[in-house]
Image 1 (cartoon, rainbow, N blue to C red):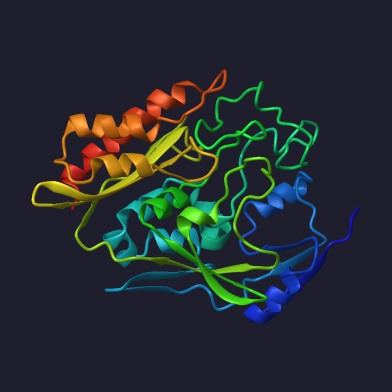
Image 2 (cartoon, rainbow, N blue to C red):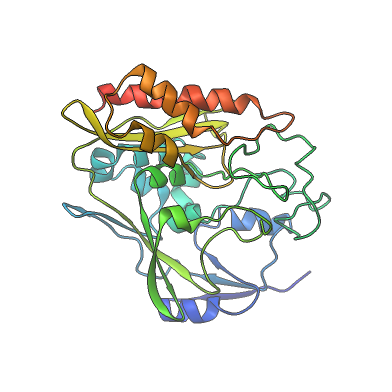
Amino acid sequence: MRPIRYLKVTDEAAAVTAGALEETAFVAGGTTLLDLMKLEVMSPAQLVDVNGLPLAQIEVDGHGARIGALVRNSDLAHHPEIARRYPLLSEALLAGASPQLRNMATVGGNLLQRTRCSYFRDRATACNKRDPGSGCAALDGWNRMHAVLGTSDKCIAAHPSDMCVALAALDAVIRVRGAGGERTIPFADFHLLPGDHPERESALGPGELVTQVTLPPMTGWKQGRYWKIRDRSSYAFALVSVAAALRVEGARIREARIALGGVGTKPWRAVEAEKMMTGKAPSPALYAQAAQAALAGAKMRRYNGFKIELARRAVVRALDSIRGAA
């Protein structure tokens, strides 16, 4: 049995110093990390418990929202001002996992959630994300749940988070702290595409700690529902999910936000679809064109091709739902 050092910290500086050591992992709710440790997919030599840090506050005002990395998913989902001003985020959180897991899982942990690819979780199979250079068993294996956007010949694992899809659509910014001080990372730049290095999943440097998520004010925006299509109605990961919001002025779309889950190797922002909608009048025909643009670069494998048409229809449905949004 491999020994594991355990360290509980109460200030950010100590967390960053400890986190910079090799084979160290931060732990808060542990809803992903501990599972992967049991499977020996992750084997840190040291766990740094960050639950004692003062990072569990939610602040919402006219300048937007500031959400601490240790806020539990259930607390964020049920926060009255988050539910009122950012319904996309609240609905996405409530669509994820189970009540028990939401009570433990943190915002920071959700941002860094690892893929649910069965080959990643099975040490008997090849996985470049788990063991760089070993290959990708999913390419020609059972890939029904895998990504069709942002893939490479090294990895097609889908990103699992619901919360992150909403954060992508809401243009969130991630604040982190490391040995060099604090910095902010636009949400679109936080998660990395697999490319030739699927083991690199985020823009975090060694020992950097996520401390806060900030959201801009959504004044003037209409937010559609978070649409999640899955095999069963609870505790299932998305086959396809969509978060969408529109800012409409004078019967024209001035700005659009569309993000997809279940289909990308990272939370997928449909930038080209957003651009082609700008300046045009909302209509079912326009939504269908946007859906085509959102999936234009999709690459199917043997078992996941159905996701492309399913995602197109989900985009249309999400955009159409905005007409009745408060």
